[in-house]
Amino acid sequence: MYYYLYDTFLAQRKYRDTLARFETRVTDLGIQGKIGRLTMLKNVRELMEQGIRKGAKTIVICGNDDTIFRALAMIVDARVTLGIVPFGGANTVAAALGIPDDAEKAAEALSERRLVRLDLGLVNETTYFLRDCIASLPAVSLECNQQYQVTPLGRTIELQVANLPSGTVETAHANPTDGHLDTTIAHRNFFSRLSRAQMSYIPTTHLTVPLAQPKPLILDGWNTVMTPVTIEVFPEALRVIVGKQRTF
Amino acid sequence: MFKTPPLEGSSKDAVTIIGAAVKVDGDFTGQGDIIVEGIVHGKLKTDHDVRIGGQAKVQAHIQAANASIAGEVRGNIKVKERLDLTETAKIFGDIETKVVSIAPGAVINGKLTMTKDLPPDLLLPQSEEPPRAKKQAKI
Image 1 (cartoon, rainbow over the protein chains, first blue to last red):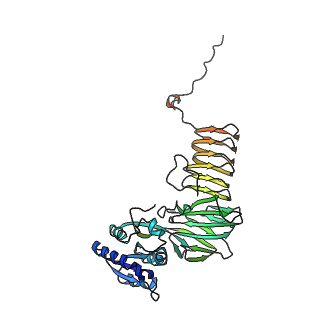
Image 2: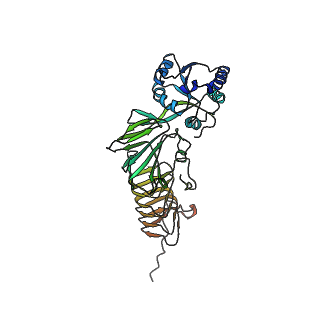
Image 3: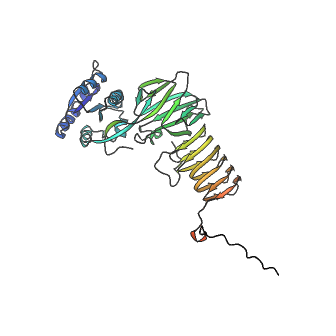
């Protein structure tokens, strides 16, 4: 059974026609299901629990990256399949997975049901991330794959651990089915700009940031974890419906 | 971001780039090609290709399928196929390779062993002893 989770912004008048066309297409394709609408009073957790209790095997997120990231942990823990119908701006995940921007075409991609198992990033064995983990840190030796140490020679570093391409050049190599995370270590130059010539790119399965001083790492652009942290790949943790045009 | 093109014959495996602003200590085993522009201490091993940049300083044993070296390497180098040493290369260690290309100006301080397979007609059958010089008859 499909459970469609609508983000709060879909209640806006401008989405009314698009949603009506989408719902008609979903019915035509025979993939209709229950609908849960996020509101100020109903959060993602509540609605997801409700959907899973009702027997949903596929949770379709109708929203943007933010909606997906907030529902991620519950989808992984409940071992249900994730489907995406992109609405609004900031849909890097849908783009990477090859889901068309048009809601009706996205419904067709859902009905074709191409399933792929994606790796996730796992921080301190408790918190997942799908796209990336970003931090600005003082120079610290990073332990990679429990085999070697990478020591930055500058004073501060910009650390990015990517799992999914997000449309930037830095994450273009990222592939969530390759069994590793793509660690980029960059430095800022005199003008506080990233010095691309000095960037390091290291595929890792296990990364430790042993910084005792608490510094924030931003997971998927919304969740924060403080150092020290251990980041590892959680292989094939998420089952997701992808489109033909996926970037990996 | 990374304008350096992958080495020829590279695989789909991820390329590792050790930038000029980092130092790596330990056993570095890569799954794909490795490009070194910074400092490496320990061991560098891959089934694919290694490129050591002109400013790189490597104090490690290197093992790879192909290698191109422009920087300084202190350690033994074992290459399965082809080793290219540019004019700025400085090697302090033994080299083992099948094919080598050394540009004028490259420095090698160590033993160079070529492991190229000999054609079958030049190989002796195992049971046959190598030919000896005929003994001269005593007069």
